[in-house]
Length: 121
Image (tube, rainbow, N blue to C red; front, side):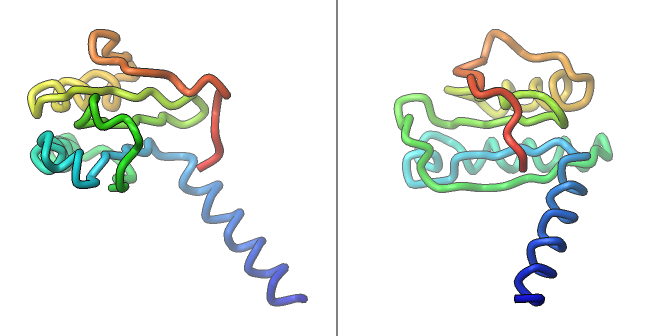
């Protein structure tokens, strides 16, 4: 039981540390890649490195909204997730420049917002 308790404590500590950084999730399922998600991923990754931002990038399978791919979720620390959809690489770069770097949501590309508020990472 102690080892389980220690694992739980360690996991919570890691989750707390991750909550200090922005998290970007990009749909990389078959539908996402077919719609250009791989190009969006590369542009976002390059821009984050160029701007030296501390961001946790995560790829995921199908998000379930194939019609809106490529989809990118941005969760800033302490804020609800914003989902952007139908993104071009140029639009994704704009999201990095404004939402991730400056905290300004790019409302023209918003697909949805997490209605439950802030979700722990």
